[in-house]
Length: 604
Image 1 (cartoon, one colour):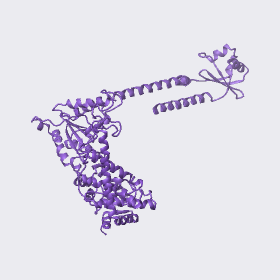
Image 2 (spheres, one colour):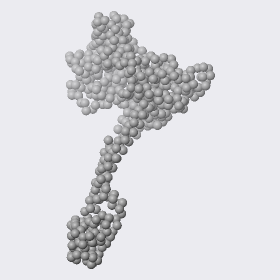
Image 3 (cartoon, one colour):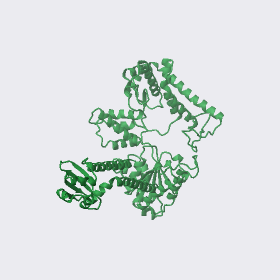
Image 4 (spheres, one colour):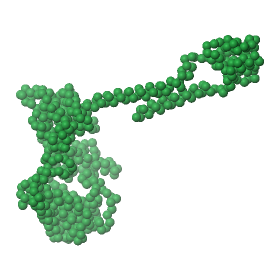
């Protein structure tokens, strides 16, 4: 549309310019035009001094200096024309006659411009429309082409190798076979061994699936084709399947090579679980991937890597031997892996001498590699805001809280009453947590708003945990209800500040009953099958595989866990009421209590 407007404006300006030139040429003088008979009369009377002939136009200068115009007959000499009108030859000899021959081509063009320009404009528009149609046809021709991108570098242009991927020791060992096969396939083929055609990288977001795939390609020194699963699916039927074919054809022509399909669950979802039929575009795309992967010969050195964080919804045909027959699990990094990851991301950052990366790693359980990279970046931003030349330990600690809870909302000022309620609420959480041996140590308490939280109590484990017991969950419920209980004991009332705690506690208690089998009355049975659900919304259509009587019992058991936790929190706070007042008073005064200061109040 922009091009056509540009062309129209250009033609309009050209037309306007030429029209102005023509008007200028035609309006040099506004002399009176006379007929040839009148010209003859004036010649015979001796009034004409000079006649200037330009093509068929006559410019006449009279004896008194007046100028007039006339036209002679086309193709006839002026003298012959004047004789036919009865001119006096003697008088004609007294008149000075001058002749100027214009370039006939230029004159013809100028005279024909008003007639030619409209046709030129129509031809130009027709040419532009034909050109656009050809461009659209070419785009349609390439619509089914692959969108896979050849990329062996990271976002900053640096190549990634296994040494740049912190942690994941077992994962790198598992996937090292892929690298060795691509480097020396004869080593495997000589023994009749078949390398896995597809390797599925499974892990939560940010754990390094894409980075690991690029490291494999760089270690093997082969082309790495990256494509997202959603880029195969289009509105038009058959486009996705055609893009799959084209992607695999490109990889085969450049073998040995690697194809990495990120978020493969976008097209690899279980067939038949949706509301559409078998001719659904997504299912056709998945069928084409299955055919292409199964069609690989043993000597075709093309490896398919795919990443997903939802392996439970993938089609079984995609995971069978011969396709994605190897599954590599990427989990959240351990303390040692987090320390190593932080060191890698801090290589280009000026860290102060007081920075202890091990402490930061201990304070970041559950952080993924992407979270840790973001943590280092946020610390650098905080240091820059304070005009520091180095990143200090306090910057990293503040960055942890910012990543976990959000930035401080200093504009969210509480009045005295709200501040007092929030102080007792957070003191209740911290006091209950410190009184239970199954809980992680309290690291920090604050009544400064962060994100959507009016205050927070930060508990961090001293070591990585992979299993949780029933007693730990019961203690966690008591801590979650500690703030609610403190408000009720001190103010004989409750506020909306406990709403999120109640929500989390209710969900945890229900999972203890329905998923973890921790209810004595219901026993070790799980309730609510979510494996084969039709997605109409978040858990909207989860299958209810239990009766109404069982649903009633589930509700009763959930209530029992909540009531037990509430009783536990109430007993602790009632016995340590003086300490609760002391912690709350200190929070109102200082707004934030660090670990040492908090535990100092408990022992005082």
